[in-house]
Image (cartoon, rainbow, N blue to C red; front, side, top):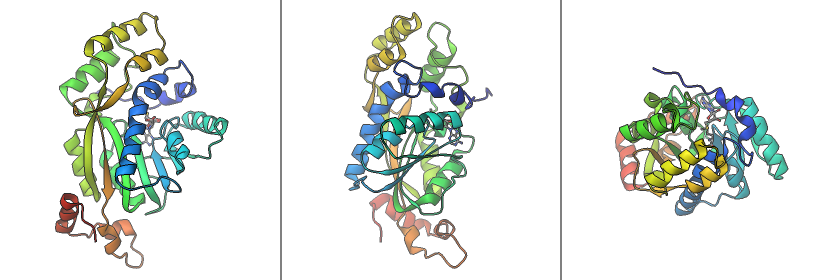
Length: 294
Ligand SMILES: C[S@@+](CC[C@H](N)C(=O)[O-])C[C@H]1O[C@@H](n2cnc3c(N)ncnc32)[C@H](O)[C@@H]1O
């Protein structure tokens, strides 16, 4: 199996906020739809981000951290890449935003149990070796009833064609590094649902994240970028993603940590997350299906 190169984020760190840099693609094409979605979810779940403790897991240059902080959240971003975090810090400083960026592994989050109201994890789950472990860590640090918002890439023939073959492999079309993604590490929605439920995170919604442009416009835009006729920024502007019903390539969604975790009173010397593991499957199922909490 090919090996993913997560170290490449160290090398492109300078481009997270560069107008026409490589990361302009993620910033301009993908991010606006995710920010809109996070806002929609916060609103429909009755959350005012002001003063909420928000954790951006695998925050990169802070594309999600920034708008969440602008909405009034108290935001901490965690990422493995130090140069990326330096770019994120410099950008936040330039914007007069107070965001706490820390080095850390999504598979072993440097946070206490039940210390966070909202966790977001965008385009990271397909980069980690142990996705269920990340879910377990997110659940551990979330307060009971806490919100988890995510997006990732599905493992389908469509994602192989679009995200691997066209974007990475085929010389006439490829526009991202060849080892940026590994198809086998993509996450099917049912795998994610299983991992969420196992960690007492109740999946509430999953929905597609797809190009607004037609396949023809998309292909033509990629070829123009390949020929050097347009910048990454322009390519992103021409190929915005939008919320859709098509989950075959990318999808996003949200889950909420079971309230029942609050009922399983932690005994002395037992953390809340450990106590939560003792919940009855029936109670969890009722909450998942009915959205009911005690
Ligand atoms: C595609 S970028 C997404 C960045 C950001 N979430 C966004 O959407 O703008 C993937 C990020 O995940 C980070 N990453 C990969 N594995 C990680 C891990 N185990 N723990 C924390 N961060 C990780 C990378 O350094 C990179 O910044």
